[in-house]
Length: 125
Length: 125
Image (cartoon, rainbow over all chains, first blue to last red; front, side, top):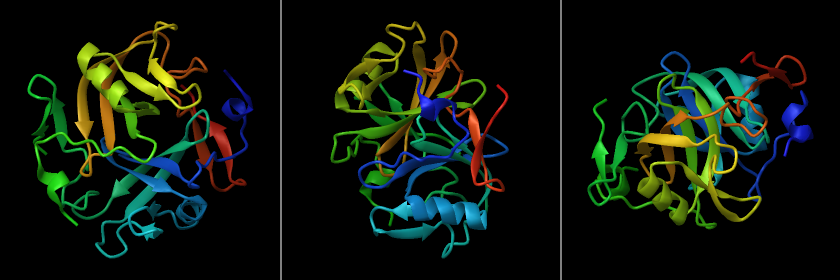
């Protein structure tokens, strides 16, 4: 299944039918995954240009400069791209209290307890 | 923007219009992100039931038991879910040579060099 997208040094992002790629924000120091969001081409280019994470807000249908209002900006230290060029990792320094709109550092603050329902269990921060 | 999905212990996955959620596979020991794939309800339930990662293959339109043919299975140690319940992290132990179909450990083996095009640079494994 290896193809030209896998081995090229040419950036050729593979946007989905909605014009989006998945973007995972990972703390560059701790390697904790902080959030998963979406980028369109404009968001990706703004992120490269400014060094701060920009996403596409699907709920608001607008470009979203993360932290522009809250101060919780994400300084991007490195961007990694996957084999088929439809997902990226942003290795970031998170400013402020955290990445999650609930006030938590990470959006992934619950785990699935499969023995019990399944149900969710809050993880201690 | 806090709502009932954010603070509940009830699992209520928020599948998209294609019936999918994003799933990030992260090495439980090193915290390296190995791949990003997709799950439908059946894939999620099979993962819980078997303890091995199952995804939905969008290219083949079928349930995909990761490693069933290659031997590169992913033993799932924990599943985390995000605030709005439309993305999960699988904390896994990766068997075999790695997660990527190119033979690499991680699918994220290239970084974006923004000074140069932008272009892609291969990261040493």
